[in-house]
Length: 382
Image (tube, rainbow, N blue to C red; front, side, top):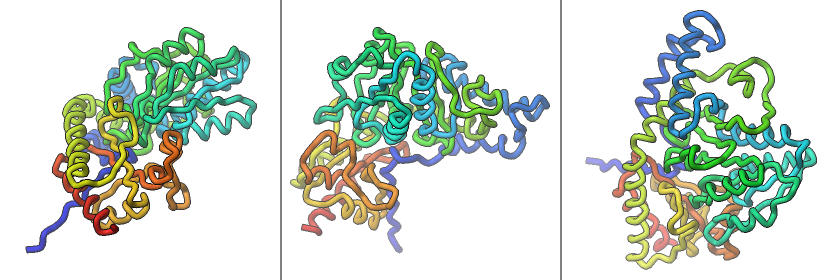
């Protein structure tokens, strides 16, 4: 009998599979209730009702009100909408934006674009754990500051930021606060009523929902300029016919993620601990990248200074193990992560960083298998 080796997907921070129950919830809106949700006939009303219900479900997972949720085509669009919509609407008050050096490129590239429009951007440094210091936020604050954008949890190293403290300071100063919570949403509890942010971005495909749909929380207390113009959809905040199946799937995934959050957190930490234990026992040199206690449970970023990132990724791929560096550029080659580069100067560390990110279908045994494969690869290449 031939032994079939199961592929192991450890790249859930990049994207996730769609839960079967999520797909089941979406299918009727492809096959039966396919009307335009802006139409007044029965098929249109079915779509509108589904969107309204999904908006209630998504808002409840954040402790927000349904009318504060704007559906988008992606997390990237949500980030772009937040930064550009708030910046352009508040230009008469000032032109200064504060963000961090380790943000996702959906934020960093939008800031670069806003600079070309005449805005000033200050990039906050991070410490060796990838964390922003509130003291730095206070130090760079100006009279002209109109927006602060700091991510909730980093997508590459998993470090959680002091969002509540930063948001409270921003509120005190009358400055709008945005957070990219795309990687954190569904992995840890997020309650808007306890964290005074003005906007927050989330995405469906990070939580076992479909690709092509995201959402932006907008508090309603700030000025906001829509980026898309056309119809009256999303209370005139985002024109365009809504992706009804995607929105329904997003809401179902959000509901399921909330139900399984504690189960997943416990399992992911167990996987993480099993992997690092094996490397220690085998005498493998490795360095954890990220905060040792304030981290997203599903992300483990490690540097193996004995082997380059690209070689490790290719070797693992040949074993049916899928993970990433978190920093692949458009050409397909690999360059040092801008996140890890902001944290460390050690070139060996930068050139050997690997991101393992876990999902609901992963097990501790998967972690054990991957850890042992890493040991075999390093020993072979020695």
